[in-house]
Image 1: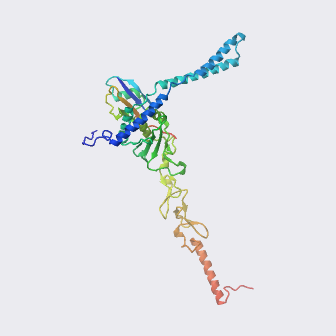
Image 2: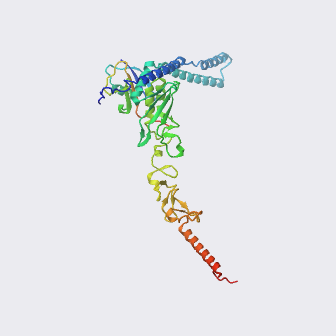
Image 3: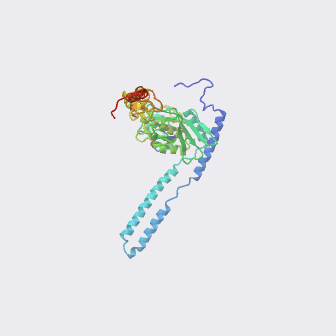
Length: 73
Length: 343
């Protein structure tokens, strides 16, 4: 099934991807964010906060936004 | 987690006030038009035709002249330079083409409306001004490593969707005291402009795609993060004790207390009473009108008229002079010289 996956880390990524039915938010995170902990991200499914064990549905919009983003001067 | 099921207490985004609903729709319509127009003008990138043509012409020329002899080393070096330049142009074109193919489609009206709803869920409230047009949210009070910087208003101008034009305005003026950091309201905000640092590309991408809630969330996350390695002012500038004389902030260990008014003063601004050696601030230190040294009020006599106060030594000296003068005057009046001076 296809979901819209948005990763706001680094340069940002937003595109539709294929995931297996029953994929949870945590599993998608583990697959896509290799070097990070889900606790360090704002996780939203369809623009709403979502628990890690929530199973994704066809057409869902999932976004991961890092809690810490270093500004500069 | 338990949801509030009290009747009539649903989240505001679910039961929007009629005016807020209208404002959302009107702003979404306006922004959707802007995004659609930008997409219409965003044409397929031009290929590096000129670069290739120049290379092909030069190669053909050299081949035609081969019958006259091998090309010079200078001509071959020039051809190679053109080939590398052409290769670089093609590589850049491939990258531009890839980005163009993968560019997000313009957000739909439904997308933008949903973003505005989500924004209110995320921040509690969103200020929509359709005339300007602007969209603003207020963060929670920002605290970095124990330093309170207060809430920030993130104000996005929505007239253009090319680049995000926004301000991060500190709602509680709390700047470092030193004048070196004028208009710095956050380690990464100066003149209401956030230096996005590591968040720059993601912020730009979110805005260009019409992901307004992500845009504001990313800006907020930068505000919530402190990067001491690259800051307009380090957090230490907000900490410490403020010197009442110069206004600068100093570590507590490097601050003295004025013995008269109890104000805090830094070492550089502190003064000592010449008489009793107590610490004084600039307001409480007074100069002796005779010798000019600094004294506390206890070590200065009452002001003796226009000349100001005198320290104990100068006061005694002046008293002695005065007594001598009075004696001389008394002697003059009695007709006898105060001291018999030989002729």
